[in-house]
Length: 113
Length: 115
Image (cartoon, rainbow over all chains, first blue to last red; front, top):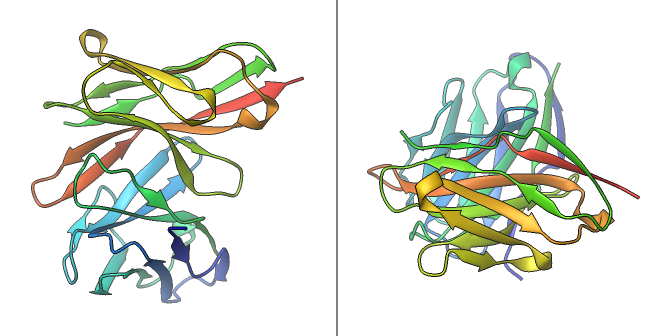
């Protein structure tokens, strides 16, 4: 069965900490995405990557960075976590064709105290 | 600019009743449209998608959606709702940003099913 795996289901961090959220897919997908999900706001795109070492800003990239050194892995980095980054983070992947669906991980609920 | 609007934040239906969730999109080219469902504590799962051809598409779990270009809509329907359908539903449009694919999501509709 195809999978998108996010390393942590729940994460609690302190303000100012550097936070790494890891995502791995086993489907050889070219595209990978990081979304943030907040009540009433739906899914908002933070960053996406369409190839190894390539990245593009989404709608809300401020305070975040990403890394894609290998095709199967896409990491989201919070350089200095803040309380307004408390949220559910969803990773997804897809084939290159925009007709192809997204495969989602189960999400990481991050709390920044 | 591409956008997706789901006007209903929350809907409550009785088990066995019919359901329609609304979705309107704004996209300059041929839209590729999707409906996803998110059960509590889970990631999103694809229900159905539309690319071309027959404007009524069938999906999993008995859901269907109808594409209406004139109304820029892609509403999701189910004839008889089951308690297990309680979840959050997201409409999305697949687009191209110039460098890669993007997906634009609505804000979601939360469905409650009462016995």
